[in-house]
Length: 100
Image (cartoon, rainbow, N blue to C red; front, side, top):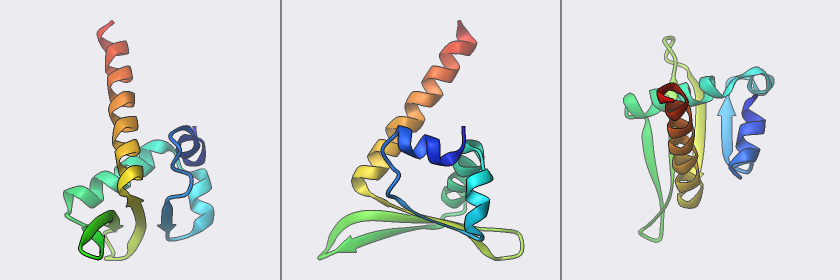
């Protein structure tokens, strides 16, 4: 599956994604997408988004080895919850296949 199919699957098609070249996103697999998010978290490239002193979302980005920001995504709180549940469901589904 490509990224767009997976975003549709978990109702996140309206999230804001920035990549170095938009046409590259169409060719990427979901593991590329997950890896960029993992990198953003592991390198602490996370910024809370607040409005009127309330947390409304989060911005994550990846910086490549040439110090160029090659990926950025913005989640609302609800989108982040949906995304986290999707990841958990995929993880459990795939690991149950391995166990069985």
